[in-house]
Image (cartoon, rainbow, N blue to C red; front, side):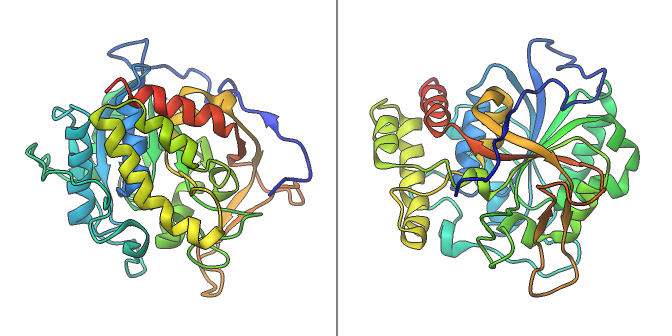
Length: 338
């Protein structure tokens, strides 16, 4: 759906707090923690991050969402091993939302969350300790504004970290997340997108924390369609990782193809990583974003003040458009290096 007003091009300068630094260990890399509930599209996002030398993935924290926690933490390790990164640290986090019962999406992702390719059970061990504590300890141990949180699922782990250790809010460089929708409405209810709907109270905590946020809602991700030609380009690389990624996409897209009648489905979560790598692929604007937590009819709705009709502070850069061709070229070329 086209917007009635033009977007401004996204540039990272100005979206971060002054004094931002890159990784303390390697100044040429950007330090990130990936918080995720894999999910086929989460898997592609993780692969993209692990294939990108500009990023230093400090660890991966699993949360319940697309499937229960036992599966999401297992799936995260499967993807690390697929990428040839059994050294990656993976932690298990929250097994349910802050307040509401857990809602999962096996009807989209299959019973394992990664249906499609046959991926072996992981040999790498799950790290000891709670994902929330890993987030807190890592942010506290590093220079101010040096760690970016990449949120690909419900925001439960990040909210728990902010509640348990409110001091880390000032130390986080940025949170880049996939979630919400406005002009596109919702994908799990008419009003709500899945990640926000699963834990709207956690989302409220995150959006009210005063941390710079970049938000990739359905309005953006629905323009990143996995067409047959794009899937074929991935398979043409003829590598095990690209073949597995194409199989993941092939399974994942079937639901949205039936739902929306499109050639392919939206590849949501990789938008988070792609934004970090090539922000000029995206367009958006700074807005106030509030989360509905009271009405059952609109629970989890992201109320985005796109037109600036309130005086509420602009707490997020909301992405509304993506260069889909450039986005899929980036994914294909990077995954081919694994």
